[in-house]
Image (tube, rainbow, N blue to C red; front, side, top):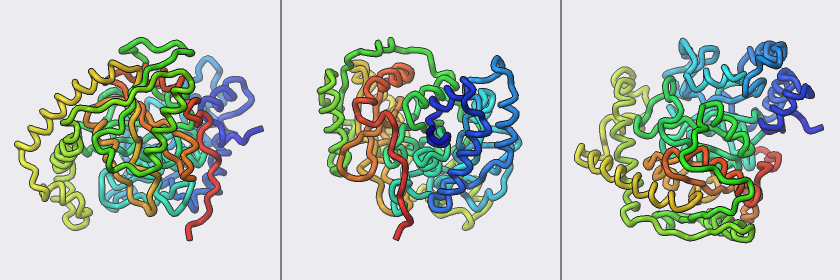
Amino acid sequence: MIEPFRLTATEARARLAEGSLTARALVESCLARIAARDGDLRAWLAISDKALQEADRLDALPVERRGLLHGLPIGVKDVFDTADLPTTHNSPLYQGFRPAADAPSVDILRAHGAIVLGKTDTTEFAAAGRNAATANPHDLSRTPGGSSAGSAAAVADCHVPLALATQTGGSTIRPASFCGIYGFKPSAGLVSREGVKLYAISFDTVGWYGRCIQDIALLATAYGIVEPLTPPPAPDARLSVGLTFGPYADELEPESVAALGIAAERLRAAGHAVETIDLPQDFGQLDLWHRTILHREGAQAFRNLALRHGSALHDDFHHRVENRDGRSLADLKAAHDGAARAQTDFDAIAAGYDLVLAPSAPGIAPLGRAPGNPLFNAMWTLLRVPCLNLPVTGTGSGMPVGVTALAQRHDDAALLARAAILAPTLGAEDGPPPATAGRPE
């Protein structure tokens, strides 16, 4: 029998339903895995002391009262409000802070029967400042990516089958690539952001992680992301795929170039049509437009903390508040106008394919604890489209790397259904191998 902590959410859900696994046994197994591994990995900022009690309560429920996520442990990034656990934002200013209520996105999961196992480490305020202390489970000397560092590492290292993340630039997709798991950023606005630390209101998006694509779809269902924009495919459909290296291809490292190449070869061999596409010339401005909006909106998100706490607030946030890059309101207007044009332009491109594939990160996870370069993610966040990291095996790097599956805005349900057809071909449907990394030198 496979140890419960290694089960995907989909596998665990099936065993819970048939009665061969209890919520208590699953939670106990996950807690034991955390106890064995997190001294090195440091994915968690807080562990719930009520998780086993909640598991017992759920085990006692009659079958007809059990929810969609009955008994499944989940990690919550420490920028989501939780009433029973501190919400610190990994900031010295919020140590021990207890919100009065759960963020709606957390409350929904609890209402479906999920068990919040704890709060995962994050880049400070999911924005800048202090890095997460979390290591990459495949190599403890490397970053898991940020800002959703702890959530990505916890899922990759089998501490929990599911974890919540956020994305304002690349904070869900890039860690998924670095850690070799599935990560999903839905279309902007489809999941409530209430009770989640604000950075840039135009971009902040709730995302999540799993070790198979069915787990990603499970949480999408929990959040009501089921309405089709375009028809979902038949299970044996041959898909049309647009492949792009994007406007910043010169910044790609060999591992990400290889991942896209391998993906194209495997998909063609499986009978799918793959066409390399060029994006419009003005897409080269997307990163500038994103950063302009990000920093101007970030100035308002952190202005009160700068006034209240002065030098106790990390200088990165004062950089935003003081607009040290000198981005004018005219620059901000031009960025919004450019983004609006690009959104409709990309929707038209994506509508011509079943999905589009692009790089998920510049390359493999770099050494250290920095979040990593968001260049290959921020453009898609700006365009407000759904993004799904698909792990690609066989790149020869020894570290995970993925590709991003994309669709037009609000085509989330069809994107997940189409990506589920392609995922086994990319060689990673069973998720990453068990992490066995040792201590860094």
